Every structure is written in structure tokens, then in C-alpha cells.
Length: 168
Image (tube, rainbow, N blue to C red; front, side, top):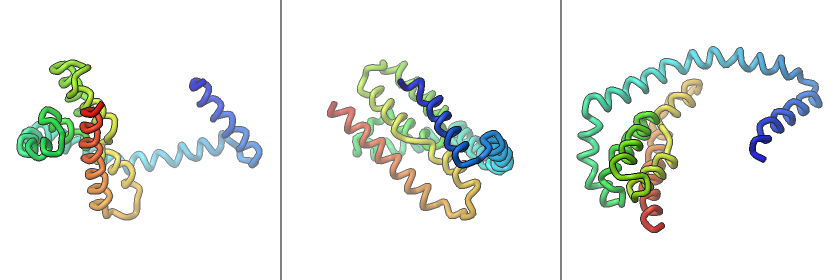
């Protein structure tokens, strides 16, 4: 059933455009044409996020912050072994995937730590990447509040993920 969803959705949009007397191909090409300037405007933000993520990891700051925050995370029910994953996830999806793979290899895929890591990986987002993409085209550049709210929500989801995995 799910394999038919996209073709059916495409057909519905196509039929709706015909009913509204909109030329679907022309509307598509206009949208694609306007995407190019947007992609160019987003590029510097994405490059800066990627560079900062690599610097955070390569400088050793990631490990230092992980070590510093382990006691706090442990009080909130997040195992010390997952501290690095919790810290990297808001910055880098590929970096957090690498940490997730290390956890699987070290502790086994069916362990409590691996289950927690899987739920943390799936229940949080790369906040800074998303912020760079979403706010690149925004007129307002006051990003502090939305980013802080996203980081707090991401952290709460991590703590809750460990709690759920512990009781299940």
C-alpha cells in the first residue's frame, strides 16, 4: 500500500492543478528556478556549520565537554557512555551516526546502551544544520531563542529516551 502513496499523491496534485487551470510543468520549472538562488544563499551557512562541527571534534573540545558533563547527564539518567552522542547529535548527523556505530560495536546491538543510543539518534535532530537551512532565507537573524529551545527539547528527548528504554 505504501508504495502507491507517492504516485497517488502526484496524481492528485496533477489533477488539482488541471482543475485550477495551472500548467503543472510551468509551475514546477518556476519553482525549480527559484530554488537555485535559495541554495546559493544557504551554502555559506552550511559550510560554516560543517567546519565548526569538524573543529569541535578535531580540537578535542568534544571529549573535554563530554567528560565535564558526564556527572550531570548521569544524574538525569543518561548513561556516561552516551554523553558524546548527546553532544554531537545537534551538530552532525554523520558524526553521531559514527558514534552510534561505535556503540553498537562495543556493547552489541541488543544492549541497553545501544537501545538508548538508537532512540536518542532517532528522536533528536541536527539542530544547527536545520537552523542554518531554515533561517538562511529568513529576514530575522535573531536565532538565539529558537536554537536554545531546540537544544533544550533535544536534550529532554535524550533523557526521556533513556528513561523509556530503562522501563521497557
